Image (cartoon, rainbow, N blue to C red):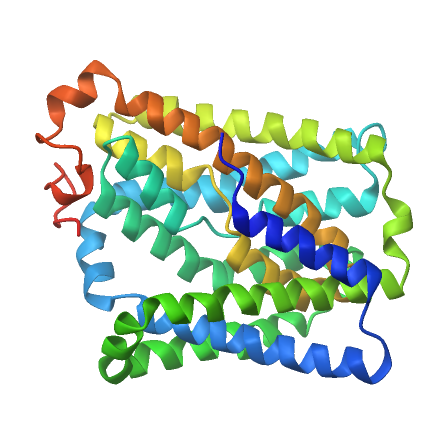
Length: 338
């Protein structure tokens, strides 16, 4: 099962923050750089999202509504139910991080990759992940304000305004400038990918440095981490089952069910980390820990599921010849995958 190399880089960044945390002026510089990096990150997201493809994807609205409901309704309800594991398995700060995890949007890249491997509806996965990310810029802080309130460290009412200024405004600016900058971003996709990942690493270093300075890591023990992993394993198993069998009950095709399962059961590390740094302040390091662990867990489990789905006899019957499932036209998508 795959271990995401980027997770190893994140863990290395956490180790660096533990050994050499930013303090004093260094902390102020890191915080300012982190804020700027988040704005750049979402500016690039805005440029990359094709408005035309998103509008075309609206034709398959039932699938997208289902994914959004899984992401922003079913997941949070399960997060609230997990309150029953406090204090037996989880401490209150870890539970707050777990609840935050259930509020962030779905992934884009991994949902597309696993849907393609499993021979599912790839265009639908692209649109579903994009819609979820866009909706999360607004829904995640609103849900956090409703469900977390003042319990989440530095979270306050003006955090919603901070989210708008740091995330939504750059994203909209990217959409407006996409006409002129879209080609440049597409040509330099690999280089700008390092900007994406570097921005998130900077956010992680800043958050964990602040956590080290405030001593929040003294609240975590090996037993609590094991409890957190157990709860997250149950959460992932429940969502994978609900998205698969629920989509079948709603009479979606096999290709659509695959897209719903992979897009509706995941949570985005790239979107969640910047939001947590804004919403949680000094407690952000503990808040993002459940998300980091869940991210790796979902990659490992979904990789196995995708490979098994690709070997299903039904998959061979409905797929076009050849190993490249992403190059075929998928029934019900209304678009051709690229």
